[in-house]
Length: 392
Image 1 (cartoon, rainbow, N blue to C red):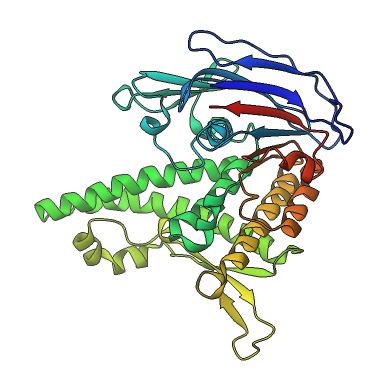
Image 2: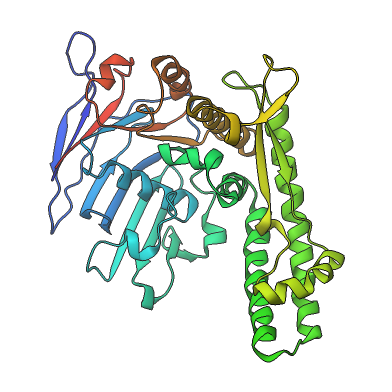
């Protein structure tokens, strides 16, 4: 595999900046210095990323433009792998939901993703399952994931995001959590503590299944934590949904309806016997869902309809695009920082008019775009972008 870094050419065919290339080797890094242009709209910048034993990459390094970087290559060349590596630096996990074993290069005992921003050196260490969990560091100092996330705010947009509409409730909860975890440290801590308490409580329920005996004192302790952290999670999710519903929408008019599973002492007692039968806790924010509805002005008798049930695939794509742009807006308002915008092969899912809507957003912050089509650069007026070309 080879990798080429360059500046995109102008309409006259002349390069706009320096051209240089690197070859991906199995035993060494070759570092590339690229000319980087100032972008006044960018507040937080990803300068470079280095990979070791990550997915298809034994070792590689990539440099990013202050404005737009386009990653071009055929399918299986490793474009999405780069995006996934960026998501580890931003979210502390794969945006695809992959496990440590899946992202670690075959037969490797450990891997690394190292990113350099204007402010920090971010590092994620991936280990074989038996060695423990993923590890994190900022400027060489070990961090927990809860203290690592939020240092590279980013919005990721890929074809798999259609699952926000058509997938299970977990995809819609993940949409909310990804945004709130990056913008609210208290939410990160609350969600972490809630999930710990949930695992402990589920273990107690399973113990009741096995023994027929219930330790009410231990249940009382974990119930209290579920209620404490669960109530905070509900409040924050409701506030985010209110923001989305009240925000202006220039692509698709939709509303979110929060179907929240209230966690309280009364409800935990109500489902006590059913929980023993199922072996898990049946109420709380881990059971939340969100309905996404659209106005149907041409069908006044029906008024509002579920995008999941009644929306065409084209309408569902537009709703996801609208939600992603609202993510950008929310993060900028909450953080006073323009997040990184990562577009992974989405243009195969959109028509020319809606591609233009996305590209109108591109100059407003640092953006990384992946595509299989070289002609994309010229066709959509991205002549001032840096290009990373991957070859199998």
